[in-house]
Length: 300
Length: 336
Image (tube, rainbow over the protein chains, first blue to last red):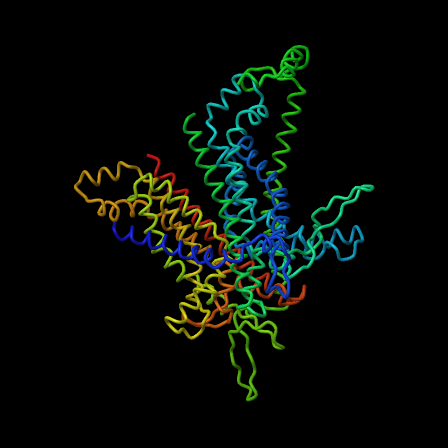
């Protein structure tokens, strides 16, 4: 007994040391300039704004692509589909998809999105080589396939935990299936769905391997932004056809391929601290949400 | 619940008397309009479910479609060895991954050895710590502290792997180098230490789940027989939860095989065939990650990388499947 306790707290100690090291080394460089400035002087000075912006852009598109599909698929699986052989296969496949190495998703993105979809779009629209090469949209699409199982599984869990009696009561009052889902099932499952979405975002923010060859760039002076003009009004929009900088990829590049690793060390720690802060913030939000949600369910 | 019946709904209910109506499962007449709407909604959700399923199938198809091309020019045996004819007409058999040389060598053995040499030690280390942490969380710690510690483990699991790779590269390798003077600064052991950061949380939380799902009757019966707490844990709880624990270890091993960033940054990326943990190795995932960016599309090398992808996909898919089967069996068994 004492041994397990010792091992557990040794583990906690190591973890705290790791986090402590990042915070200790990284906190010095964090400032508003660091976050909102562009890298300068061969990335030995300046900030990381393009990387943060790229990360936000990719995850935004990723969420838009994966969450609607994932949540609706989960609704179908839990509320409509009968427990047949096919649905059981789908569930197994979804579960297993969560364990497929992320680099394999990168290969899939390259083969499917870029070479198949992208090249065909170029051919049909005659855009030359615009979509048939690595860019922000395909990276986000690949990441959304990667997080799709997470969204489906967590939404499923939330939907299944809605008490059957509530659903029956709703039917008993004369509500139709869709009314029941909209007014009874969905409100109760909302915190769980939100938790799944947040976890998916945090996974996407931290994932590096699949985007290594899907458009993440070493250094870009400009943000991947395009002005969408309707008449005289122009709104800056994320340009999905451009390459982008990515926070996690930025750390990888600085740590392994920088011409002067010691000079960029503060930036490396700073970027790591920002990345860790984002993922932890997202995860803590998810944990708190789930905790509150469980308490709420307990009262019913 | 009364708010469900909107005014619009009431009108439809009245209309349904005149319209051709059909009784629902619960004996209520439902008008055609409502039924059509319901069907459209159902098909919308079904479509989304199908999209999810289609992507699963597409991953399969496109991975295999590209990867199988590798066998056109590179034979299956070429993925194992390469026979090099020496000047004196003797044949030397080489097991090398060297796809960019003039005589391309595509032996996967060094990559598989590298993968195992990082994944196995990582799994062993993680099993030791992970099971201990799982037992502690499930059996020993008081429930209030567990409410706090369990989320800590989830937080632990959420650290991006690139961060772990970075720390191992910058801090871990330096400390290890100063202490033990390994033959290569970046080596298999360092990488497996990094990997265990990823796997420990998985094993710990799954072990905890497995042990907690064991009925309290068993614990009580054991105490009733006069066993101490530790005897109960080691002779009753762990054997009873063995299948769950082993599933978590299998899953952890699968994650270690598939992890990319840590091994890419910390394993040294030299394709050695060795059993020496202190040498640099190159894993399958790191090979794809490092070479896919520079390879020209449609070349043998390009297809060979997809072939590695197929192998990775197959291995991890089956490991996950085995783990899931074990967990499902355990779930059924534990329902008394």
